[in-house]
Length: 163
Image (cartoon, rainbow, N blue to C red; front, side, top):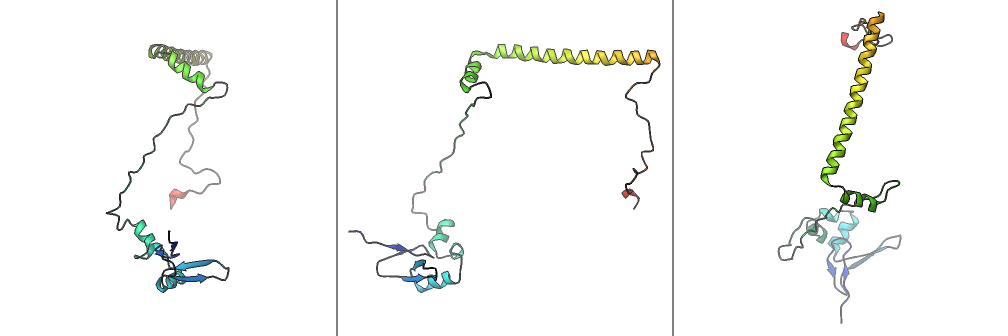
C-alpha cells in the first residue's frame, strides 16, 4: 500500500498525509504548504528560487548532489542532410557526387577558370581598342572627371568641419 504525498507549492518538499496547510485563493485555486513559514513566504510573493532552504534553490544551484549519480550530458551530433533543389532531387545530387572523380572535377574547374580569363582578356582588348580610336579621332577619354573645388561644401549642406 502506497501513501499519497503532496508537494509543497513554495518549497518543493514532500508533505505526508494529514500534515501541512491548505490555502485557497479567491479565484478558488488551492495551494498546499508544508508549514506556516513557507505559506507566509508565498503570501509575501517571495521567489522560491532565491530562498536558500527551498528544494528549487538547491536544484538550481546544485547543492547536495554528491551522493546522487549524475548522468552524462548527451551531445547533439550534427547530421548532414542533402536536400534537392528546384528541378533536381537529392538522389540525383548524390549520384552525381559519387560518379565524378576528383580529376574530372579539377579539369572542369580549370576549364571554367580559362573561360573567365578569356572573357576578361577580350573585354580588356575591346576597351583598349576603343581608347586608341578615341585618341586617333582627337577625342578625350570618356572616363575623365573635371577637378572641382572639393574643399567647398555642397549646396544646401552645412560645413561641420569649420567649428
